[in-house]
Length: 256
Image (cartoon, rainbow, N blue to C red; front, side, top):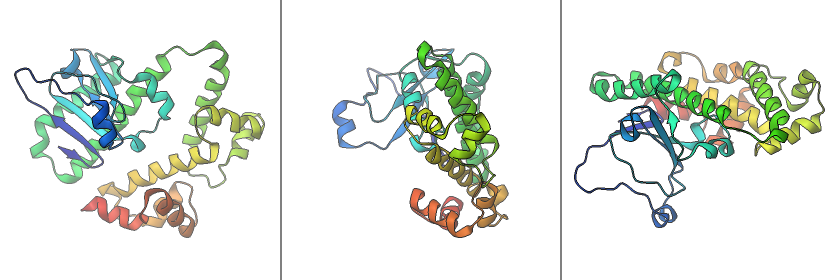
């Protein structure tokens, strides 16, 4: 069941079948996906996340959510801490996510394509919230607590100011009373740079808005300006370099 950029699978099988992705299959092809096995597959109150680049353990059940790694707004090294680890799904966002996926599977045939795209984005947003909470709940080494706390504060600051063209590593340093070098060090520990993090967050929002049927009347350049790209030429250049196509072509592709 395609849901825009994500895919929901409902699997039914019987007998001695063991779904398994071996190292040999990984070497043969890696679609660069995360695979979320939902409560019905694992247990009444747990879900499990797998990485297509790693061997997948066998499971049994029905619902699986697959989505590109690049669509998840969490650093890969943070997500790795949750791979193959039971994630609570009996309350909060975990319960909402499992109920949403079950509802999509049940009502899929009665939903229009634009509705399915929105449901897919909602499922991805809830997945991000569930995984983010799981990462926050995992214990961290004491010596890493301050940089990690600062990173979370900076990430929240970036999220609030994505539309400001003046948002930059230097602006982040001033807003938090730290040196630019320390900002770069914090992001280096997260496997990225401050500029790359800002750019990724902006492009994620742009891609979301470009694929939203409710925003189809808004010009492409206006969406870029909304998320910190005031010059259309800069928006087109950065978007094409990252995504591989122009913003306008990306919107047309999503519409079809």
